[in-house]
Length: 314
Image 1: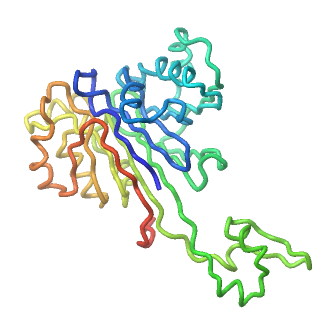
Image 2 (image 1 turned 30 degrees about the horizontal axis):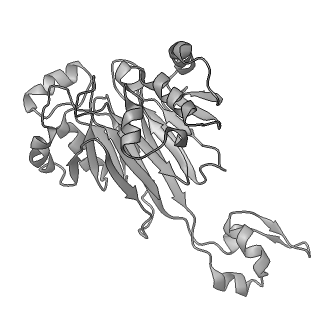
Image 3 (image 1 turned 180 degrees about the horizontal axis):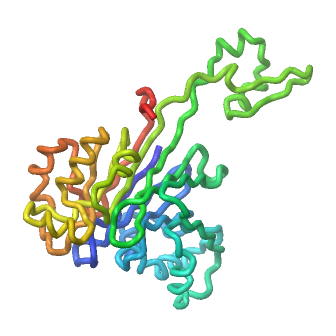
């Protein structure tokens, strides 16, 4: 399962009742943060999470409302006695940008690793011991500076077939390693592979996150079949369509069209313009395009769980 918390939903600047857009995920005990604007560490604490529970931070791009809170967050992590490494993932130039910010946070009790994205679409495999069966796919979107969306996939192995194991005469002491995907050589020299006892891979969990972009084919491709699609809806007023185009952002209605075309299970909207006082007033109109839309508020929390449905088509 994946715990999902939309820490903030604001774009451009934090407001008294709206933190800047940021996402926090928990899976297998590891924590992933996506974007870190001003006061993100406060939003994290408000929902009961510790900054020490962050192992990866993914950045969509280098506009201030998505990264300027990083020094404070890293200092909070240090003050929470974090000593294990944190890996930062983001567009080319990430290390230079972060090291410039860290002039005001020069001494941290944990190492920082950098992974700069080098292509239009790239799969990053977290450390298996920390996040088994988990992958992060970064894909370019369309903003006025280099910007990426992220897809998070938690795969799920097939069921162990007890009847097949018994029929093949496999000793029970080999069942556990086979179930974990390991090839086993028995005491009599027989080679046992997981496919002898494991069924087909079952449907996993997919979450796709996009902000600061015009609609693109890359978004539809990476959101297809997602259990949850979190997407910016900068504007709710239809008259703001041209402004969305000019500033390389998206309206709520365009996000709903992407969700519909990608056949996602649910859409959460986020990254609202500070001029939008009450984003929820547009929910009914947006649901006419995609009924499973939620115009999210700060702190929205949900747990994505495995289902028994077959895996989505590639």
